[in-house]
Length: 187
Length: 187
DNA sequence: GAAATCTTTTTACAAATGATAAAAAATCAT
DNA sequence: ATGATTTTTTATCATTTGTAAAAAGATTTC
Image (tube, rainbow over the protein chains, first blue to last red):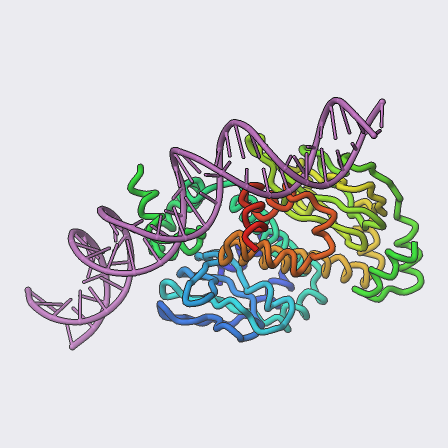
């Protein structure tokens, strides 16, 4: 469990006590490739840390799939909107590879936040990071076309390119797979 | 100052004490139409509540303008990314009408959050709302074309339509003004 | 290792959007 | 009010993107 403690202490330095309490609350789960970590219409009651693997957060509209974001090892994530509102989620989370996560319930998070202020700071920062990422995403979708968004993506996530299908990447970029194929061919 | 207290107490019910402290920290400013509430490259060190008026948060890329969001009376806002990171903002905030705001500095916000837990809850909720809005925006941009986004906008912000120029609306929707004009004509 | 399945690319065609220019309409300033 | 400015619409053409279907390539399964 060194990995997750290392990760969180880098964001908010916790006391030995807080570290122990945090560890206590964790549960480890492994999801085979292609299975759901969160299904649509479920309430997301957990925060996750990925020990290994890769996931996507996505939704469907009229058969078409759209991808909100990918999460890979050493990232913490949740389906924020459902986690915050405690309402059924429109989004689902699927393992793109066999994925092992540490999982902590919102209930435990809230208790830990009350008990240890640095843990409260940790989650507050995590939400901030998510917000910054979303603003960046919105800006990119406004100002850039598919080609530029693709180039940005490979510049910033080069390793992921080998692990994500081009169909998924297209659904993330907001273009069709055919268009993505054309973009790649144009190089 | 009834308006702002009413607004915040609806989100998080504050003690008489907290209400008073909050009021103390506020400063009122009026910005004429067309002027900047925040310029690009400035650090956004304030949270704002709009008593009256209308603003846009926007940025430019190669002469082209893009609009992140509009804020109207009885809304609280800040330029979140700069407010959180304390770095110069890429985004600017401009008054689209003469706009009167109550303004509270981040420094004061942080002090009030420490002193009054319901104020901490207030700001935490405000960030949550912003996050939910952003997720909705990203989903919409992925799954809907310009026409559907336009129809969504007028359904959800019908009153704003009279107050926003079609150019600004197009820059918000991520389409050209000519395309927006065509969408409107097609009805 | 061959068949079946899934992924990616290619092609042809149709539809949507963008760029540009110009006209029409609305708004603003004196 | 009237002329000037800004905003919105219209028209044309070029480009981009989408859809559908087929072909090629890669992977999985038995």
